[in-house]
Image 1 (tube, rainbow, N blue to C red):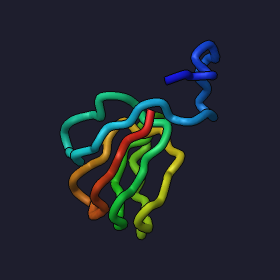
Image 2 (image 1 turned 30 degrees about the vertical axis):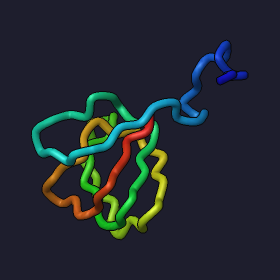
Image 3 (image 1 turned 135 degrees about the horizontal axis):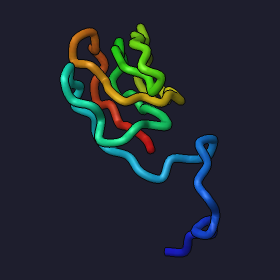
Length: 87
């Protein structure tokens, strides 16, 4: 398949080029820092931002795309599911 953007440098403002399913964990960091998160089934997401700040996104609707740089999604405080990290 042709990729007309193969010679372009990736930008944080650009589209994600990779993704992986997230299993929330209080102890493990994500395998890569995200550029966004897709939420399949809505709820709360307790997370650690790239800056080191802990935040909880409350009442995130199903199908939402959060443009956030996360290093961890905690199990404690997270009720959303089917989360996909986008990088």
